[in-house]
Image (cartoon, rainbow, N blue to C red):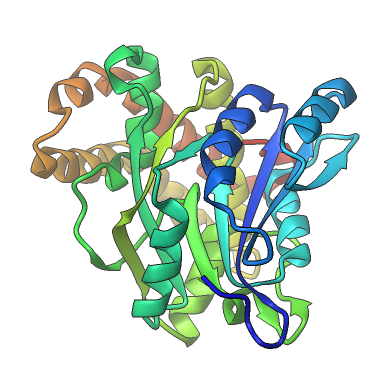
Length: 307
């Protein structure tokens, strides 16, 4: 990768993290050896204890660090990082993602070969042979649709932990379009006005997300409520009520969709079956959150999405 004539970098990587020091260290240990100074940059916007933040900054001095003293939503952290990005390609990487050895080059190559404004990759489970059933449940629920092998081509949905954008998707000139970055709504806007989403399996990360199941379950309630409220922000009461009445069907619909995809992959089907009760709980929590969002609005939910 070569720096561009106007001084803009070819690639920026934005990582947001709330109290995820160990996972963030693993993420950066895999990523930073792939970064060539003056060609790509890594921007981390994080909230953690001051001592932990200082240790990470000392260990990874080439990273651009933005430390916040108070916890804020992941969407806010990502928006802050994107606003600082100088790259023509802006990759959004999760703190819980450990990149494959060729990840940075795969992102660059995919954007060079495809005109699509938004390109995502595959997600596998880190240290899968040692992972607990709850780790498998969280992984399959959140990223089972992107479990390798996945086909290269147009896609309806992309993983938020491994996604990249051409600069025009996120900036109007030099002005960021989204002070807060909500992946689903940004992607819907791109699809409506510019291009389809693209999935490239050569862009691979491994999920390393050691979060307690109960904490993750609670976050699904908040995420579902925030999503529903944002989705129907300008809708009338009748439409919100109609969507709310459909939410009891969602856990079963999601299980069927996920199961159909995972079944075709011919990988980890036994783990999918063993974790079905946990999967149902996660989908049900999301559905209950959607119901609250349609009937009562977002409340504090959007501000509480820390991972």
